[in-house]
Image 1 (cartoon, rainbow, N blue to C red):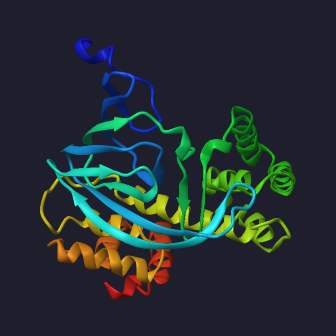
Image 2 (tube, rainbow, N blue to C red):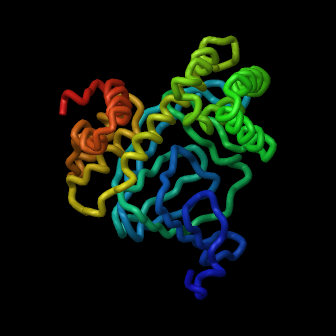
Length: 308
């Protein structure tokens, strides 16, 4: 770490390396560095302007039409608003509230952005997170006690499967929908395995409020994580044929309609995409498990590995 900028670095969960350059009590200027992670769909409790300094990213904004809020979550319907590839020099406006929830898939690592932003606006409420195909909620439910409980449950999943099953059933029966959503999202790597997937089938078919919605959100989240993991090499090429764009488009959509909307907008902007080919090459290391997961994901969009 360069001592000249070391004092500017601050702990943050919002980027892999965070610097605040200026703060006058009304707005601040920050630099966000992304080396290994992406941003799932979220909105903002502030406004600002962001400048891409390095790397390319696929930014997708969404429309969400919500129904009545139930125990902290809001079922609703998603649609695609705009898909844009940010390149060095791209400027984008950050709108406050739920005007333009968006996701960001980084096509190169690292990517770096500069953000001029306001302080959080309390009237807008906490930042919300969106989980296709049909719900949004907030991570504000993730208290220290809840995170500790999840850590204990993760330990049980490795050491005592029967105790884990009992703990999961009891937990999801006794907490709010918002807490159940967070629980499933944070444990998809455990729950979506042959050993424990029956727990999700039970939750989806139980009388737990919105149990099926929570499970559907977790299934999509798991698929998105799998796709983003395939992008971990993320070639640095600036060519329009960069295969990571195709996989990022898939990770930013949830069905055939949403994928086609993103691909159409990318095509209009001159980006060449080949979703099946890119995904086939990404799992071309001979991993049968990876190929199986990829094929299952493609079928949701009306595609198969055989189409490649």
